[in-house]
Image (cartoon, rainbow, N blue to C red; front, top):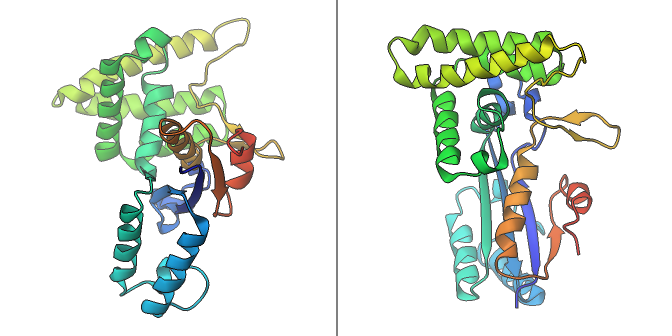
Length: 262
């Protein structure tokens, strides 16, 4: 029975509000997290040792940079997993899309109620809006929201709304999709401005709830955490009692924090 999973990641895992100039993400625009279920660690170690010998791989790890020009290594590993029927779970995140999805869920079409937000048609609609923003939203629209996350304030959120609404309004006459999204944005702006005028001072800035570092510094958009949550949920469908062994350098503390390590 498979009850141990090894995890590893590829792609910078930092906060996406630090995406860099032109949302370049340090030339790492895709994040990947993989979990592989193991039923026999000794057998796996023996297989990797055999593959290193056959494919003449130097070093103790199968680093991708050492496998350039050796596609047979990945093929042989896949064959081994298939032969032993080992489960493999993969989460692939386009970081720009992740930003757009975050904007949709908190800024463009913020939560209404569990009953409404959990409807399949609503989730599909939000996904389509995120895809639309990913394909067409200009850099200033995305950057203004990132700026609001980096330095949360009423003025920063208002600036983000101005950028989003202005862009949509300029296209609404010729594109029904923009007109559709703009209606949601205008409703959200009205709610935001009502809160900004409220005497109690409680204003929804329409930002995601940040995760906090050990030094209490906020992390606004972390694709590794959502990927871990998704993988953990998927693995939970095949076995109730599991142990995780993170082989990457940035996830262990967060895994322990979220109670994943048995």
